[in-house]
Image (tube, rainbow, N blue to C red):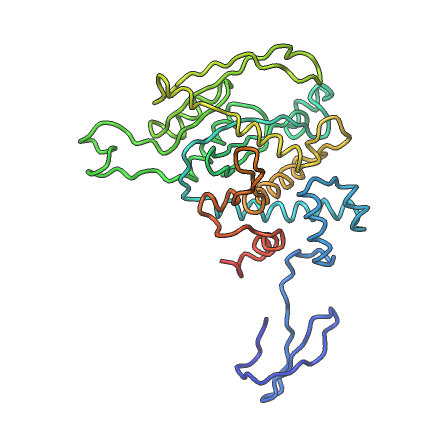
Length: 345
C-alpha cells in the first residue's frame, strides 16, 4: 500500500479506473491508491478459480478436464501452471537447505516431450534437446520420504553430475575440526548420508564428485524375467547388491531403491501427463518442469504417506518428518506461501 502522508485518520475515497480502492486523509486531504499485490502477476482471473484449477492439476486431472471444470481456457491454465511451478521451484530451492537425511535413493523415470525419441527426425535430434525422451531425476529419503531435489532432462552423465551436486548442496556436511573424525590428526570420514542407486554407469563418478568420502554408497541391480514383453509386468527373479563405498558384508542388505520406485508410481498418479497409455503428454519441456515443481511442493508439504502395515493410518508429511514444517499444509496455505513469499517468512 502506498501511503501519501503520516496521519492515521483516513477514510475510503472510491476507486480508480482499474478498480483499485482509494483512500483520503482526514487531516490533510491527500488521496492515494491502495495497490494490492496480485499473486497471479498480470493474469486477470479470479484467485479462487486459479486455486481450484491448480488444485485439480496437482490431484491428477488433465489440462482439458480442468478446462471443462473451471471454465478457464487451456492456454490460460498452462500459463497459470508455469507461473505457479516457477514459484514452487524458487520456494523449494529456498527451503530445501541444511537437510539431515539418513538414506537417499535415486532413480530416473522415463517420459517424453512433444513426441517419442523414435519419432524425431534427424534434424530435430540435432537441433534441440527439449524434445523426445526426457527423464525425471528424483531422489527420496527412506525414513522421512522427503524429495529434496529433482531434475528434468536427458539421461546423460552430465545430468547425473548436476543432479548429485544439487542434492549434495542441500545437505549438512560436517566441518573439519580437531575434535571431529575428519581432522588430519584422526584418519577417517564421517558419512553424511547413505546413497542407493541402480546400475546406471554415470552414478559412481557423480557420487564421488559430489560427496567424496563423506557418503556410504551402494548399487542394486534387479534381474527380471520376461522383461521384453511390451505392456506386461515383468517378474523380478533376483537382485545383485554391490557396496561401492563404506558398505560391506551384511550391511549390503540396506542397499535399496524400492521407496523411490514407489514414488515413481505416485508421480504417475498425480501428474496426468505421466499416465501411461493415454493421450496425455507434455508438448513443451517448460510445462513439464513447472508441473513437476508444483507436484514436488505439494508432495513434500501437503501429501501424507501411509504408515507401514495394513492399518492405513496416515503419518505426517515429508516436510514434517524432516523438520521443515510443523503441521500438514493445506493447498490454500501452499498457494499463499509460494506466491506471496514476503508475507510468509
